[in-house]
Image (cartoon, rainbow, N blue to C red; front, side, top):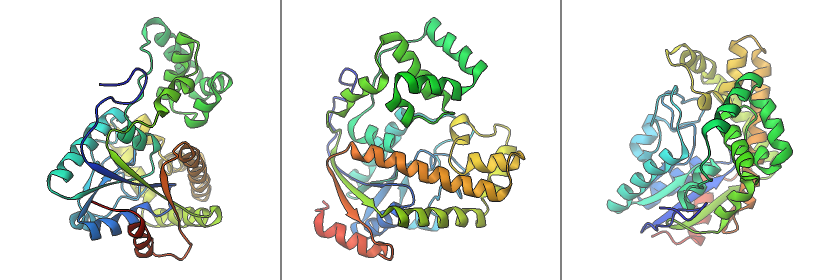
Length: 320
């Protein structure tokens, strides 16, 4: 099923178009514009849209939009559940197959770089480790907290630490156990995954904006989410019997509002922290984007409507 340490070895027939870019760049609106013109269907590539009832903070398309344009890989699991990239690829593969079977154009739209890379190139397979080492690391991370082990990871594998959130215990533990078991940073092993193999006939279309424009859009989006009831959404999710899984709880917007509801900050601070962390997320996404050399980039002007961006894309991309 996979190359050693790298991408999946099988190739799936069919052309798959990706619309990618930083958060708040306008991928969803342009993707929907293209889908409407192409008899296309959208496969979400967003790791937080997989959770049911996490609607406002993930900027999910409305039910009306989803009735008009079919969307896949949205509302797959409960917020209390964990969800892996491997499960995402399984769902996305089925979605693409269904879209192609009905003669429509599959558009993978989203900003979760790991999902995009896994769907287009396959899943990285690190050496198997576990047993006593994993148990020891789990005990340490439970005792000291994820940020402490994240700091240790930063000393031995800076690139991995840069990509992993300081509270993402699962990924921190995995990176540390691979390093301790093999003597090699997981980021170096993952370089084997950068060979450019493709699971589909992929066309990668990227949207980007000037930093000042993107930051203004991020600020406006956060305010819209607050006005649309993000606080009530988070309060309701936290009150559910299962609450939020560790993954869901780390979502930008949800983590900051949780801090507000817990009394660790006021609402204004939560909004400002959400803006800052969204900008930080965009910076990480740009780092991922630089690793992909075959993206066809479109620079979007501040006042450019999605219809015009779609026009320009269709002038240069042969959709089939």
